[in-house]
Image (cartoon, rainbow, N blue to C red; front, top):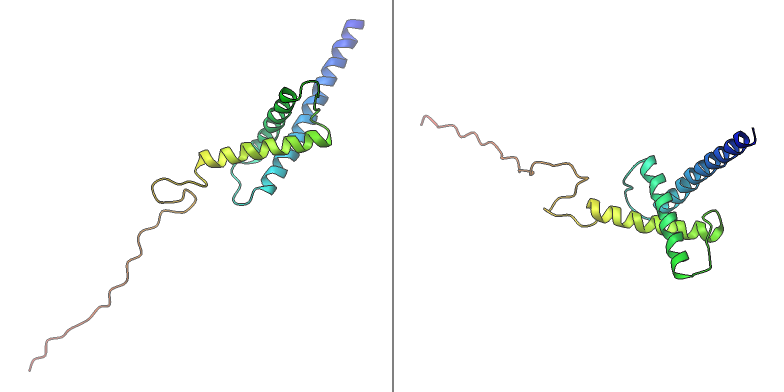
Length: 130
């Protein structure tokens, strides 16, 4: 019976951690999109994934370079690092999606338009019977 209680507690802890990361990732991704000017690519899932991945990468880099300093994501420092990581991921996403540099001379968000031809005036020349 003790094993059953321990499994349930572990499951509850994992579910709690999962939902905290989902909420935290969404807030961090939204903040990164709010800081970056211009049109925002991706929807809600991309925003959340960008926030979670940015936080993991940012906290991992800080932990790698500053040995002995573990940064928890749910802290003011972790929030700032997560936002910076999500911002960098958003920059790379826009760069790779062609939002800043466009090949071929047209922007992907603009509709393909036919060239504007000037309307020719119709001149009706009637032959005079004179």
